Image (cartoon, rainbow, N blue to C red; front, side, top):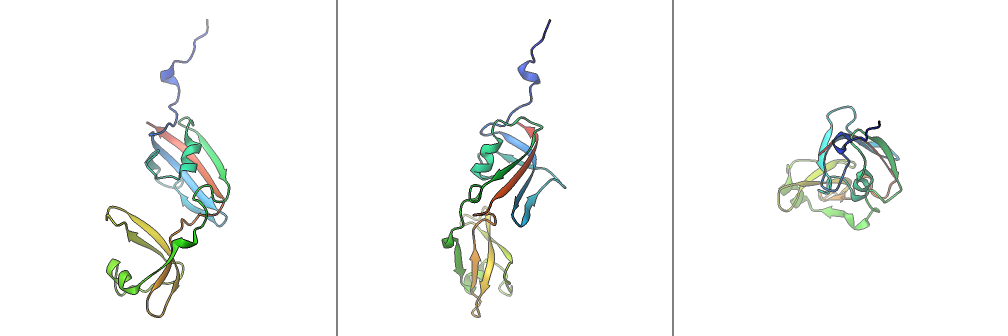
Length: 157
């Protein structure tokens, strides 16, 4: 006599809208940008925009307990670099948004509030003028680059 596994014993799989607990690592040619494997796992809801659509697409259908690595070609994970995402921000606005005495250096990452004040986004300092204006790159750090996406699905609800 043989017994078929009942659906209740099968590991849950990732679907659109799934709530996930996972470890993940994002790396580009210069190395890791995010890596949760050495610490606390992340929790997120698939489809909420917490991961890029290309990364979410690779998770759909994976069963809980899976550990996998995906290689995404240049531009697929976070789009191509957009030169329009590099912009000058006046010293006056920088003072209004943060510490008026702050001095910025090339390579600094600065957080800006979203217009609704509920979130934030980051820009990397590209240049600082004598008048205090700062040129930022608001592209994702991995835009236009190949990305390694490693994931371990701890829980799927």
